[in-house]
Length: 83
Image 1: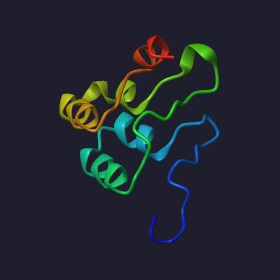
Image 2: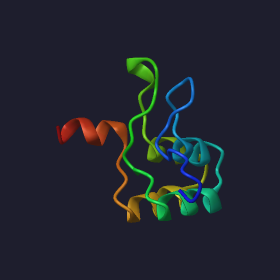
Image 3: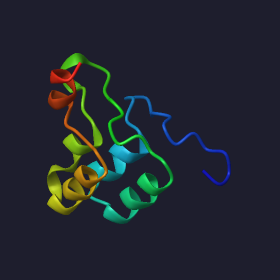
Image 4: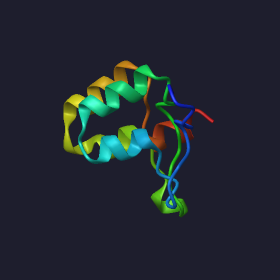
């Protein structure tokens, strides 16, 4: 990012900025982060049953899920089947 911020750094719950923006249904912020190079398939969570991706967090707004899909995003379960 412009001022040297780590776009992939997670908070205390390992949630990235992209996952947070998706969970709060902010399409505008999701777009900015993806355009800045955010990893659309970053895995988040502190417990095995809480792991997710930004696409998993986008359930509140289908347009966010669509946008993320257009940029290669997958759900946590989809990533597990390709490993």
